[in-house]
Amino acid sequence: MSMYRKALERARKRRVTLVLCIGDFDPSGLLIETVAQQEMDHKTGIRFVRLALTMEQIKRFKPPSRPVNMKDSRAKEYIEKYGDRCWEVEAIRPRTLFRLIEKGLKENVPPEFLAEAEARERAAKIVRPVTERMRRMIEREVYRLLEEGKSEEEILRQLASKYGFRTRSRRTEG
Image (cartoon, rainbow, N blue to C red; front, side):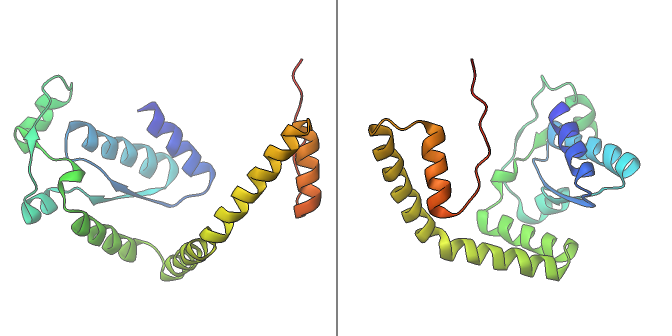
């Protein structure tokens, strides 16, 4: 839970107003939702929305279940409320899960933000082959410079000069 609390703190610092969650329908998965709602809604004002897996989706899609882990400290309470079966989000067919996520995004995220995200994704896809070729080319250049005996600092300065970017100065240990 400390990992989730740290994530919530990062979200608060970044002024996040909404967190969309996809998780298992089991004692631990539901605990994450409960803690997130308590921590977010009351302390940070961040809204929490579970896109999947919900009991409604379980009833609708009938994914395979597994027994509740009786070693889980929350098992007894879960069983009283939901029975002795639980479901993993991976049990939903990928295409169905994709549609659930897409629907949740459309319902919860402003259209202009989704359009910007889609444009960034398309741009990244278009540029990926070029950047991959450039990465390999630069790696070969660095390998050659290392063979010449250049230090990391010298190599970074040379690359920065050649490709027009600034480097962060690295502190040397010792």
